[in-house]
Amino acid sequence: MSITSAIVLFAVIWFMVFLIVIPIRLQTQGDLGQVVPGTHAGSPEVHNLRKKAWITTFVSIGLWIVIAGIILSGWITVRDLDFFGRMGPAPEFGGTGG
Image (tube, rainbow, N blue to C red):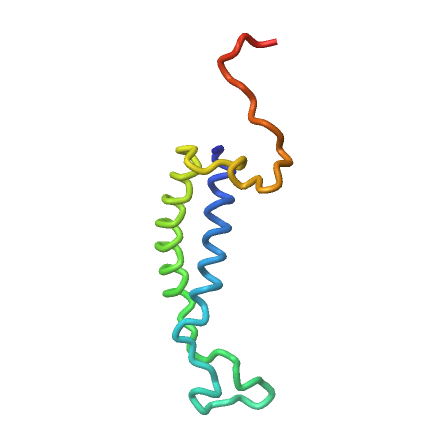
């Protein structure tokens, strides 16, 4: 895995976790009974985005370590995910060549 692949993998994991964490403990204007005229009652009033971003970062680091370790170890490869056999047979290494 190249450094670019590692960064992209981390970014994808981070944003997926962030989209899961955002609605946790979200307090809307309707929940607090303080709806500003012209806004929806479901608009966030207390969102704690900085805290959620830090939580997301720590969870993402742990998930990235596990997923990158699986990828680098070769325990699961792309060929394992080829359910329809479109990649063909794996190349033979250590043969006579040619």
